[in-house]
Image 1 (cartoon, rainbow, N blue to C red):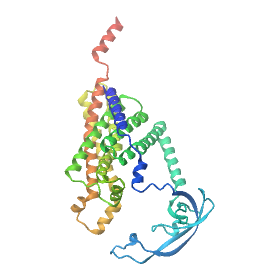
Image 2: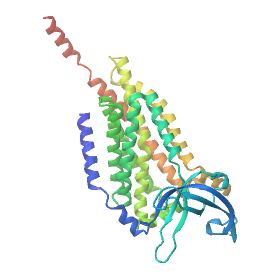
Image 3: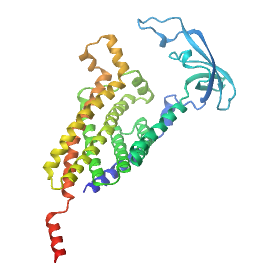
Image 4: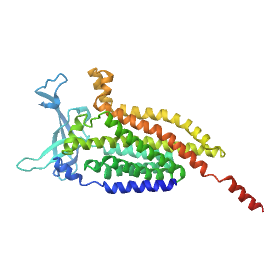
Length: 398
């Protein structure tokens, strides 16, 4: 029954993904005026820096609202090392947060090249630092540690993570951009990810299947609670400058699409921790059943819930502090504005985080007893029946 249920769930997820398969993201980008095919991003090496003065812009407005006429800026000389203009020596102005100490000679950076067109000369602009080597080294270190500590299971987990990122990048993000039903797309992507990752990492077994059923139940709870809380609390999906920009890029119905994006973020935020809890509960109940082969459903459920409560306490803290860490700059700004705590928590971005955290935590709370009950029932039902065992024993003796 469990395997059949998972198969049906997986087929439903595939069907929804086919139904909501995204259209062209490029068309949306063109409509928003973002598709600049002539811009080239090339590598360069810093050959020198010079501190100078530049005309101030709106971004240079001071905290008291005044705007200076000029500001100090950093001019960076660089040698282009890739692209059609490799070998050229150029100069660009770095962003305001970059200092001369950040870009010593030899630093690898990325610059933007705008070819000459419509009577305008070729233009170069600062883009970012080239981080390929340090990030690649960090990724290899992560892969090495996963292999050394987790063995083949650790490496399979990393492979599952890569598959999850591909699903998000190829399917879910384009679906949200092109206006597909956000809740359906996010649930389908989450189920597809968990089916592949769970069996790839933990192997095909009744315990893995039990955890998958618990995970899907938890995802549905999180989605439903998140949608209800979003409606009841009048959550505005446009809570910051980036939200306003994204809403404008998505077209006339950009605000409506952002509501879907917010609901999708609730589902994705609870996915990783939810799977961790359900896998742990299924394994814990299985170990209890192995240690006490005659334990009944009640004993297995009670023992599993004792473990689940301990795990739950640390998991809820993990969720809350993960969000707090991500919102730390905003928290610091609110401290400076000295706003009352109650008023602060009810404002846009914090109201969003409260709904996202609470919906995930409630779904997590309810998924633990659900998974524990399913796992206990599976362990009891999968044992050989005493009557059948006795009959087989009698036949063997005769």
